Image 1 (spheres, rainbow, N blue to C red):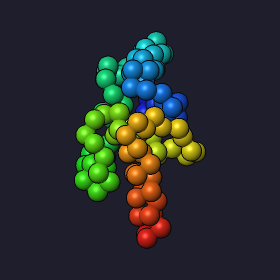
Image 2 (cartoon, rainbow, N blue to C red):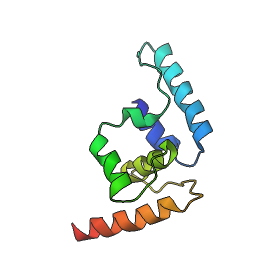
Image 3 (cartoon, one colour):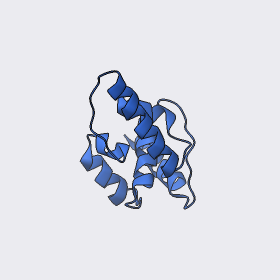
Image 4 (cartoon, one colour):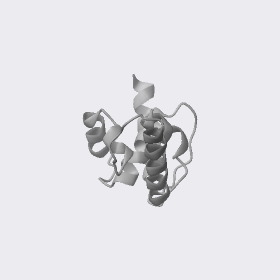
Length: 104
């Protein structure tokens, strides 16, 4: 549930605001007696560590959490999302990922 909330609503925001959203969602879930440990990034909710490594190795994304969060959002979102992309990494990722999808 927490991963879904972050995936849907956090795309256009920067790292600090995403962290605030994450804390708010955790508090809301705890208030509803859905216990969850406090985490500092929704990357820790993502169950595909090999895919995270592929983001870095194949798609040449940097190792910082914000970039990996953007990649997770782009790969798993049902609709188009905005990404803060000061280093133009998301643009490169989308082009290469789209090319790989065409080849499948």
